[in-house]
Amino acid sequence: MRSVTRGAAIAAGTLCVGIGVVGIFIPLLPTTPFLLLAALLLARSSRRGHRWLMTNRLFGPTLRRYLEERRMSRLHKAATLVFLWATLGLSAGLAVKGPWARALLAAVGAAVTAHVLTLGTGSAGRRVRRTDAEPRNG
Image 1 (cartoon, helix red, strand yellow):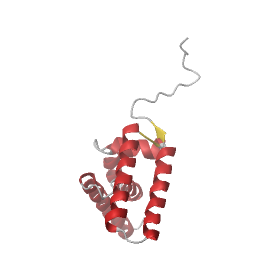
Image 2 (cartoon, rainbow, N blue to C red):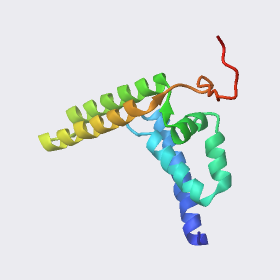
Image 3 (tube, one colour):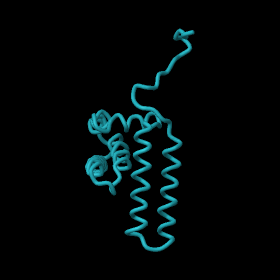
């Protein structure tokens, strides 16, 4: 990767981490999409930055579960869907005018809901893989 492109990717990834962190505290600002974009940008531009993001104690485990295993904890799924529909409902009721815009919000909400529901469920350390070489109990 050329140094200018690499520098831009690092800057954009860092900005996405910052926006994602702010999104933790501001309900209308989504956290996960920005952290996922940061992971993508940093994976392509900065090993150190990507390693820091993926091992961060606050959001590293959640990102790893999502990116590597395509799963979320039940609590995360529930919180995601509650905040998603609360935000979309508030937006549709207070900020968006017109039926087409509200229909678009509903379509986005339905698509995100479908995606979240298709992800596996489980939290860190709960899923155990057993190989055929391991002894079976009972």
